[in-house]
Image (tube, rainbow, N blue to C red; front, side, top):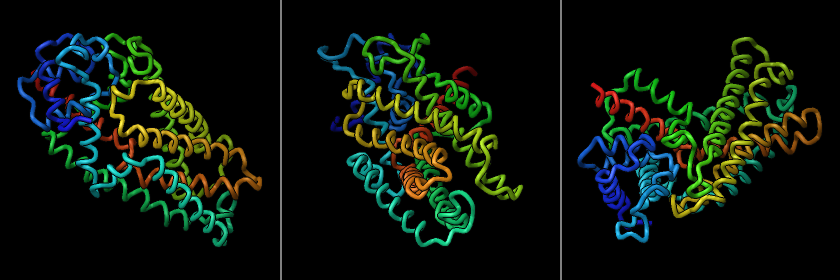
Length: 357
């Protein structure tokens, strides 16, 4: 870890700006070469725009043992994680998760699972499916604030980040460009479309981009499944359990499978990648997030498979406990990176539009 991550990143960015060999590698370098000086906010924006593909490191002639000792992926990773801690609200939670992510996630899941197990044993139930164990009203009373409060915390954090990095008015064209970039995982393609240098050193592979696709779209399908169930319940008065060809199942089952594939793949790549090209101090927290997200999807699929059996009484509290902890930790875990990265992509679209005018 650098004593002053922003100052060290600024030193390296200024050298990159003079060299410009990596100008076409990703969105970071056109932004670097369009500026002459870099404020703290500029460096923070570059750090969140960086996807840690590491192509620039393996192409660089100024890495160790050269006296410049450049390691831009590491420098920007340190700044990026510090920015999440700096802007997280309430303050301090993100740093705690970085230091002991596995322990916090594990203990939280255990506590939440025991809580839902107790609720399932004391709640009268009375419905069908898992509503026979925990009523719909109890689930709504628990998960409505658990879903909304982290979103509120994220909103405050992103507002602070946006102002600190000089963000201005958001135009629809910039939002569309950012969404298109995120949907394609454009910055995980490398400058030539061959992928990242993440887990195979100087060899380009598409695996990190593909596993990100599985994770992103799997998560979105699962979210759409839950949303469709909510609409069916409140708008059409159709209550769970739903059949195998219902919208919640048609969205949720492939979404859960994709999420399992994506998180397992990203976790495997993380074990193969060089930790010194990222932020080693947060490795545990990032891995805990992947394990948690895998657990949510895997137990959801297992719960569906166990419908009508005695296993539901065990799997339901575990699944609900994992979902509960996932939502609570969203503003302070690696999940937050998607929101900060989206903000940086919107800013980058605005800067690119300004350069073209």
